[in-house]
Image: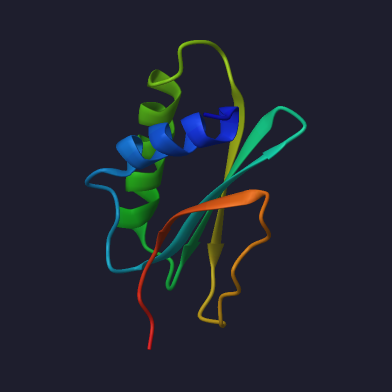
Length: 96
């Protein structure tokens, strides 16, 4: 299992109970030993922002050693495109 796959599993665990219908996609990528977590919300929401703050703490607590990571939150109703192969999609809601 690669480092990024391990991080994706920890992210999935940290996401338990966090995802709301407002979440469109959550992905993780590894850029020069730094983890980038991308979350796209349909609309800005104080409740979802609080859950993302909790997610940050939970993800950090799951690490066995210090890992540099950043969570980028985007608000968008635009069409989502599947990221490149260097990114793991952890969650994507079904959209019609």
